[in-house]
Length: 460
Image (cartoon, rainbow, N blue to C red):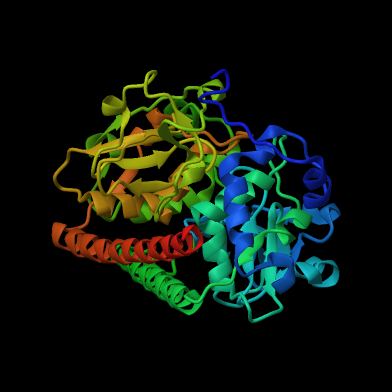
């Protein structure tokens, strides 16, 4: 009776010595569910990841100084993928780092990524995987590993589905080190058991269909972005990069309160000159801005109300959060994003906007503002597209320049200029965006179905 309600696992010293090369003794490593799942897999036909795949991470951390977040010509650089580029089992490239091609080709040949590779985030909160679909000269960045097939027993599609399933995530969580930044060692990833099942071909096909739908979704969205720029006369537009710009005191400091030279770059004048050709409003005249909360890391929990941060949000959607808050401490009804609310990031990666498709049972970080459109001349989908376009991104860049950590003041956001296109064009844009997001939702449904198939096969 004294142990009732407690989780207790009894393991032999022999198993501690023989079954994990780190000889872990912490109780978290021996949680009942994870142990039961692994025993279930090993009770049938299985292989380890190391049996069928080569696993490697970034070769040479001494070269991390060559990674940069600055924009580089694609002919001179490779995109270096990190954990934030793996979102909901798809590749997300709205925010990425690059590395010089000459350095990568000379010193980091082992870190190249090719079509068919599985990439997995192994450090921090993100532990997600996806199969690369093309050869776009990607490079391994920090904190992700490359898993490359060397056998036909397990396909890359099945492996990524297994790793993204609740069972795969449980095993990865079991193997993570207990440190400030939880990490799964390469040696432990190689030892993860993978079930060999008869339905692998069906699961592979579901994943391929899901990837095809997400690519079609992205293609439609790109066309919509192109349409917006064409309507605003910004297609193939090149801003004025003249390094000199002369301003009088009354049109500079006295008007803006800013003295930093970056704020007055010629390219911003060129942008506003182009936008002045169209009717426009400021955000203050279009939407109410509502702030969320910043509870502090001491309020973070492993379960409760999902807590959405900037790192969880892209213009295409919201990833499942890894952090939760207590329902006793926060009013979900008051703080949750409602349908058609536009989330806009003001800290860190500023200017990311996403329109919520339905009421969400979550709380957002204080770094995410809630924009509630009240001006009927603006379609929420259209406004979100403009916020993510060069039109607003350059305004965000101008306002947040000069800080070590980017911060976009709500008072500055209120004054952001939004061009007003005819309602018919806005509605056409909105319809295309909805088509794109419907394909994305169908892709997610197929991915979830594939994961559930894997879980059912193991459980039975």
